[in-house]
Length: 246
Image 1 (tube, rainbow, N blue to C red):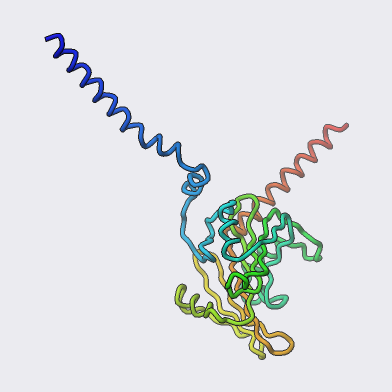
Image 2 (image 1 turned 90 degrees about the vertical axis):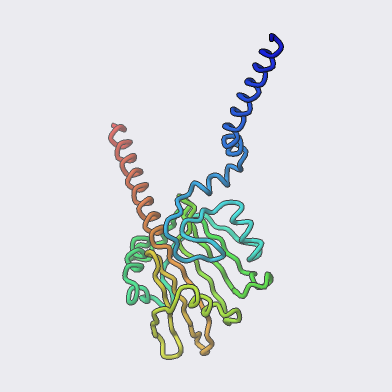
């Protein structure tokens, strides 16, 4: 009888440990995840707009993202604080056709033309064709506050990869702007507040070049708002310091 009681007790103890281990498995798996991956999954998805190599408005620039871009586009050049000009095609283009972008550009730059640097990260790729990617120049600009994209520029001379057709198939028929008698034309899409513009740009010899620009408008607004608050805080701090000086 005593032996039976001991055996029953051992069985109950073993069952209890099995239950405890199973209940702890989700925690153990979570703790074993890569911190960067967990951070990515914690990002709010939100409505997506336009993407370039899977980079969208909610994508954060990480070492893994940069490594993936290098494998696709070749070695990058990186720049920190720099000017941020939203203008394309010719001076006054966005004011005429995209007044909201022109208003943002005015907030980013002084009317006098004085150099204004912003807290951004710019990745530049000039040798993408060595990777069999049909782009002459790629510039990807991110906010250094949120590390999310604010402006993408992609330039190429010939549309060998049918890039424009691909955009039309993905986003539907664009609206069109004819702005130059020599072939200057822009097509654009708007989605969840963001803007994608493809332009045919004639040079002085009549040759056509192409440029794709993606404006992540909400992220641009966040950059402007954050810089404004940061400037106000610094001004308040200087004011307090001056008052305490005497």
